[in-house]
Length: 367
Ligand SMILES: Cc1ncc(COP(=O)(O)O)c(C=O)c1O
Image (tube, rainbow, N blue to C red):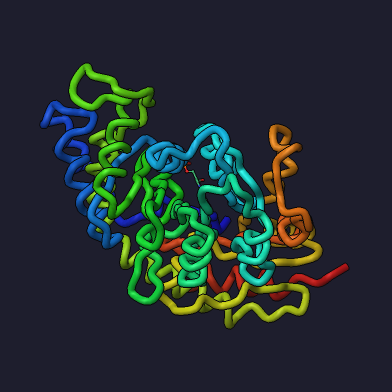
């Protein structure tokens, strides 16, 4: 079976470097928020071209902490997309703010600026822009939209590790970017991990305080924080894995290029190409098909795993039935949820694997 992710197929050299990192941490005798975390925070902030990185427990916490550090909470509204991991919206809810869902652009599955414009109210404080599937797009438009509306731009970069548009990196366009290093992400730890990146020193310091019980200096808690600290083990492994990220992203782009040109089937739709090669890191390669479930079964029979990102848009989740949304509805998101399918797209795929996926997709016929 060609899997969606295949960590066991990673090279021995990478595995050895992770084992060395583990030994380094055990030998240090320091396990939480130490020198490995400081080193990885610096490495990742530099990679994102921002001054500060604040290591946290996971990507969802990175969003919540960004919102709280910006004083966005009860009574405030944050516009985002229903076509995302539930964690995006859950982070807004946990901050105390009110999520407001705008629809997507069906050509990209990214948040639609026209729909977001319809969602702005006097209480809107931010857009939480999700770089879905690894795409960074229309950032000048989003920056001027937010500036014009007097609201903050916060980026959910959980799927867009180092995607770059016009020389700027995901996470550096807005006031803060939230990264997840969940194992399946383009840069993943051996467990949960995340980071908030920002160019704003005050925001970074507030985030450091919030991640650690709201502690300013040892045993002094000027505010109610949380426990969302990054472990040394994860930070050490992430520093090692970061060395492989450019090569891995390059391979994802090769897989995607072969899919884009090789998939030729009238029943299959493709999202539009990125604005530049650098602006998509292909965390996921997503196609669309009206008979999506039949296509998924057909692929499975031919040894190709696939997944759906995401089958249930946020406003159909039980806790979100009364969620605020664009008055014109979220029809593009609903259609995308019914038709999208993610194909295997990861650095361990061989050329034969890629051809097998393309052949299997092309052999699908509508019944
Ligand atoms: C778009 C998006 N936002 C946020 C998250 C949350 O990240 P984490 O699982 O590290 O909390 C994820 C991870 O699934 C994600 O894909």
